[in-house]
Image 1 (tube, rainbow, N blue to C red):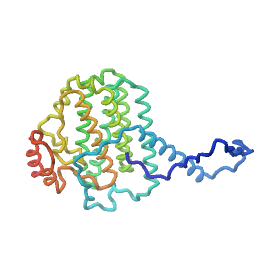
Image 2: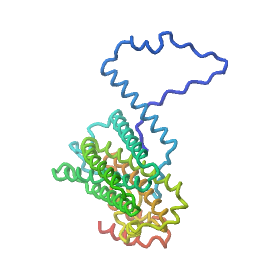
Image 3: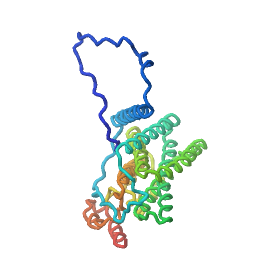
Image 4: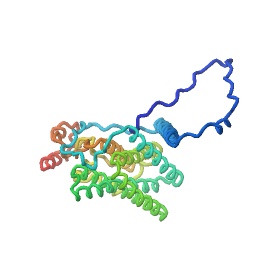
Length: 348
């Protein structure tokens, strides 16, 4: 996960021979701090910010040592060139890209994500399907929050980019089907789980709308943190329950979504992949969760791309879409839909 660049943590003290005496403690001790002059408000705020920053970096590094990294897609599409026609009054363009602002935004996002994870861990523990139901209810909220703000900008004539609307709608469509799968598995059986999921989603929506209007970059990074947690959660679940999941049938909602003849929206939300380059197989419940996990990885990469303004384009509207489609390395027996995909690209 992309984290803010920061100065390195204090170096560990150098090792010394066991016989070397330790330096004597100061005579005044900890109580000497009471006699020290008070810091000015600006200095106190700076000191508090440094402590928060160091703590956020330490928490993130500890998480990275235990978390499974999001795997890269293959094949990977080249980064898109910035969109044309972006003016200085564009509400999507930050006034300045100061590094301290980025660090502050990402530190808050990491803290908020870790707090949400602590709540979910404490409430659900081994109730996996209920946890997934809550997670998917929350995970789809940012995408229609983004769409709401983009529609408002478009209505007032401030900003118009169809690619963002297409990709975000495809993301919400994908998360909606994840939610249908969890409901079919019984994740919403208890009213308390339904209440908690919808209660959190309600406030998360308005928080995301406000965050997106103030700083789209911050909102996208927050969604990246949530999607990265979702990927890690599903990956750990697969490793713990692989044999059991392989003996269970796939839900009908998963079959209808992943094996649908029209997978245009399935290709649309994966901005780092070439259309038609990923076609899931569904033989059992294990395959379903593998595909959900991989979907979360694609969401994570799309959210990371969105943090650079103008870096997002619809996979089906790229100038090199047809050339990329023709270069996909896919077995012939898995490539029946590629002709339809190319035809759809031609009509765009």
